[in-house]
Length: 103
Length: 284
Image 1 (spheres, each protein chain N blue to C red):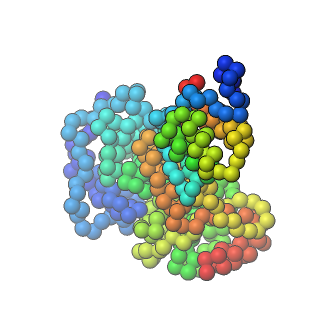
Image 2: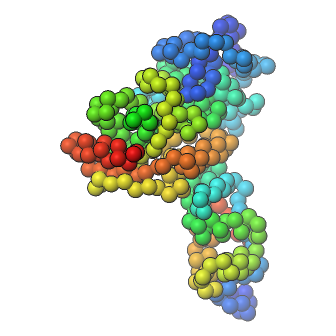
Image 3: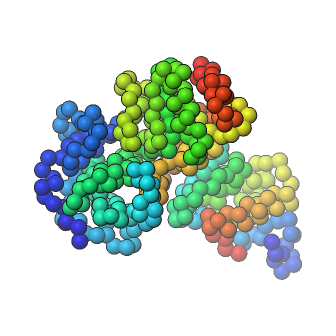
């Protein structure tokens, strides 16, 4: 992720980064994990428990910085590791067209 | 424009298939045992106006599909008022009502392929519209309980079901199976051959996903089970977003209530007794 004007730490998400689930995606939770169905491509994707929690938060809260902060309180993980994991997950979801990212 | 011949609506026949009512405009060979003895309360769905060829925007599927043991070119439309049309390239067309309770052959020259279309893709879609989805699977009864084998073609599900039925003296079903739920138990389905269970209800006990490997069982997680059930659902290429959503809910519901396990074994005939024994023990 690019730093914002050189003033934002690299291990934290940009506060203004906004994420919304694609309207064409159906979410179904299964015992802590979940399946995402892309109704347009008819493709299915599985999310593990952490990914499922991320998706739940994305549905409630679009600001990545707030999602990051919430996950920090729920999981035993340091900020930088979480940031990297979230970037990977977001990149995968964005590539699959499952979320829309607004920088 | 496709017009329904009024004569086709005169004597529709109510069938009880996979736990659901399905009206047909003509007798379907092999389905006489599924004919409802009493006249249902609900009547066949009649369009209020002539059926038009749907707009291209309503095209749901176009391509080769397996039908009656052979590949055929099918086109499926979701009609503007909720009905469905499935065209077969040789000129056969099936109409499926929005609620899935009516299948009519709209072809002017009925043929064996029309029957295959009705008993195949049209029926699969009609059942899906009524909430039952079909698996490409085999099944057999063990101790008055139903088990289902699913797997890719060539993974041995038919062989295993047949062998198990020989050992256990039970009967099998093969190829396309309307997925029973704990609520509905065993389901009748006449395509491509009638299931022959005499008991009207057999509870579904387990679903096994077949794979090659050392003999063993591994319980799939709910998400793995759901995705496996979805992957082996027949006819999903025809589904619209609503049916896809229903299919996901259906498969998730099964995986939440029925054990779905990966059954690995070496693809050797001599191993089959041990495989059947493993299944029998698993069901105890």
